[in-house]
Amino acid sequence: MLGRYLEVIQDANRAISLNPNHSYAYAARGRAYHWLGQFEKAFWDCDKAIQIQPNAWAFTCRGRANAALHQYDRSIRDCDQAILMDPKDAEAYEIRGLSYVLSKKSDKEGCRSLRKACELGKCEAYEVGKRDRICR
Image (cartoon, rainbow, N blue to C red; front, side, top):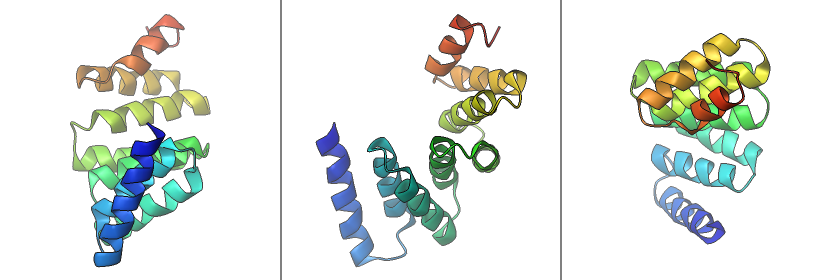
């Protein structure tokens, strides 16, 4: 899997060198950095994608990076924005739910988001929440 993420970064670097305003390339590279554990780089690439062209995918990308950096309030705001732009973004609901739960702000709101993510096809976090008796 590591090789695939490095390949995405190389492809994104090429795309950005050809078009420095390629929002999707920044978001894709940001996601790859996230999965490599390089959360600061992920944040800045996702942030750059939003500056170029705000869209749900880029906000979800930055929300994931913020969550990984324990910036849960920022993560929730980013995911809220992503959901406004794309109400069927299961990943945004999942990240928002996890951010609520991990921040200890509101298990109820977190579980509501995790349940919605599950309704949209991303059930793993909700199932863990139910198993661990965080979500009912």
